[in-house]
Amino acid sequence: MTLTALPQPLRPRAVRPGDLVVVASLSGPLHAAYEPDLEQAVVVLERMGFRVRRAPLLEGGRHRWWSAARPAEIAEELNALLRDPEVRAIIAHDGGQTALGYLDLIDFEAITADPKPILGFSDISLLHLVLYARTGLVGFHTDLATPGLGGHWQRATAARRAELEKLYSTLLTGTEPIGALPATPTWECWRAGRTEGRLIGGVINRIVLNQATPYALPLEQFDGAVLFWEEARGLAAYVWNYLQVLRHAGILDRISGMVVGIPDGIDGLDSPDASRTLREIVLDVLGDRDIPVLGNVEFGHAGPNLPMPVGIRVALDAQQRTLSLLEPAVRPLALTGQPGA
Image (cartoon, rainbow, N blue to C red):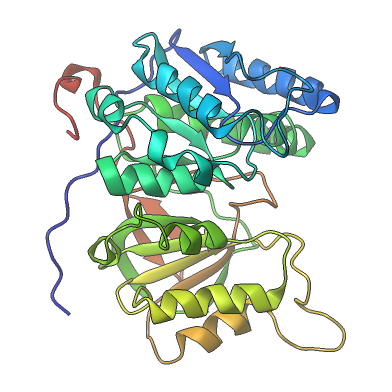
């Protein structure tokens, strides 16, 4: 397979202490019961040194069907944040089921003119994929504000919270590569090997859905990539089928490695009447494709999340159970006028 030269990722400007970070409803609504979790998330962001503001649509109890508002309203608010020079980063309050409804309303030119970090995962991973495909924007696949910073983080140990705060702060403000992400005993080598490549991924069902739209990543962007994915709820058979879609699309033949998140509530895994595990499902679909696979890494709905910046080069050594970020996710302030520098 001949690898083609891919465009460089579009890195946002590094966020500075005192910069404004906005928490926004980019998909699902804020249920009134989770207002304390959102308030705690604001505390975490402020402790990192940022000013924090809530976007207007982020009102407890406000909703339209399963969404925070109509897709056009969410897109209008997102575009306003993208165009506002005071806003230096956007973090999604939660995931949901709405991003597919406004992909055609996003102001891609505003992103190219002033790229800024957009943080979140779940439904927000769809945005990361689309924005990376259309503009090269590095996607900050990180915890969401309300269920993550204000939820999972608060149930972690004090040491783990401190580690995550430092990691996220460095991701947003630091212009040197982070290097090895902090590994834990949950990480498993499912297929040995080493590779380097751009990190691309998200929730596996969103990867599959996105590839069925006009906003799909060109297949060439998977050449040599390290594919990361996770899934929550649903059925083990669904995961097998999603992987089969990636196989039929030729994506599994292009990637150089795979990183799988901790599964969350997937029915049919490790059940008493079957021996199937997520590892067995993955290796079954991969067949004889000899690429390194690292499993049970802390990203996804099981939370808390290690950051997985879409578009950044990583080094994966499955046997040694290491995953290292080889590039910074943001660019130095002095290079603000040089998109993608």
